[in-house]
Length: 635
Image (cartoon, rainbow, N blue to C red; front, side, top):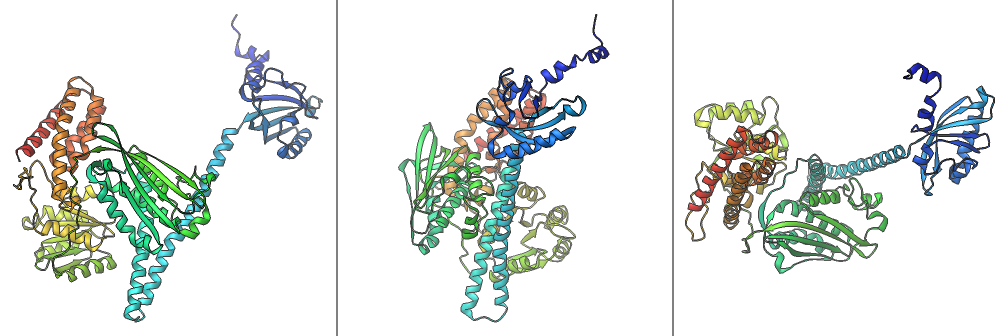
């Protein structure tokens, strides 16, 4: 006969399920702490076999340093009917300790028996989580204190020096004050960039480029940029590059540069005498693939052994006092580690206090051609008035930014006018003719994006006017938004005279035509390929552009074949991976007609593999890429 729930309860059969086999640890002890009963969970959680603790004293398993507190709570429990939430530690069979929490039932109050039922729960993980949360909270509090100090210091310097400039200083004093303002502003920019970089990496929004670069050029430029700082501290800063590493690699030189700048800056900060040596080795993994090893060794103050494990954590430095003495956000090494790992590499540190530290990181790169590219050169105005015959409209709502840009344009001999928002800008465009518009993006009344849309959809004579965005939003998504509404280019604030000159010169200066090796012009179809991005990021380095085109022609046919082959075999997951892999190349080569289709194909291959849409998109993408390949080969 099947037992009813009522009968199950009435007969007390639930005892075994609740007490014997339950997840809670149950002890019955007398008022002296002697154990008279233990349930099965004692074995499961603490490791003690059936009844092995019966006859033992409970107090013997509580750590000596908390025994006094525990006995006090135990004594209180013998005087109360119930007691709850008492935390303590209990020695396990394997000699480790676990955090437990007991609720007690006093048998003397109801049964007249001098004993306690201790219902215990394992709270070890809860305690660890609480400790980790507290550690993280303290780290963030320390970070906020550091960052507050680091930001306020340069702001205070800028404000103070600006005040002194208004008090009619001498010419020499003016130079001193201005240098101090520039230095403080540069420091502030580094701090803010660190915070933004970390946020960008942790949110997964940081995208890596795949372009050709030469390590010798990159390192030479880096050493030059740190030369003054190293000379002032009388530190010998050098680099060595093994022969195999002195070649063109395909990767993201900007992010590699960022890693090295952080590590060299760190070494300079903590090295007061001696040297900083950078060594690069290349280990060939397979055809055209190398693992590069970078060593940055200094003779600085070193890092304590107990701090080596946390040196790469967010918001931490080896010692909080380090921040006060040397400055910094404590984010540099965190960013370095994440940038290295984001590129498929790894980083390690070895150090000895008062002897020095060596940071070693590995990064994988594909090799390009062996020919060493011509070092990139920045364009400089050949005359003091490079845009003398051009008319420019500056649209900027911030008074200081407007004054800054206006001063540069005036110095260059431009005819220019200003507008504080989009509405005023549209009015000026209706009444005047301009060669270019420098357009702030975020403005009151009417922002730069809306203003650009209005210009592109308005009077036909103004639809093709050059529009360059000026924006403090530095992400690729923001840059793409500017291009999507019809802007031609984008300059990120804070910008330098060089940034502004390069952008204007690229569009208003003499057009540079790509050339073949034999000197004849390459005539790529403007409807298929737009090399303006390559020219911009390489400062019109033609050798570099030719190298990228060669690499494209070598690798893309194989990619197209693989995409078609996998689509035919129904391996759509691999199709999605291949399409994702070539997306950056499509942007790099300026194949604008394919941008949307590439994104759509990747999504369709993932979400609706084998659909008619996926098949059609595969055919269209392959056809377009083959057309681009043929066009470049004929050129």
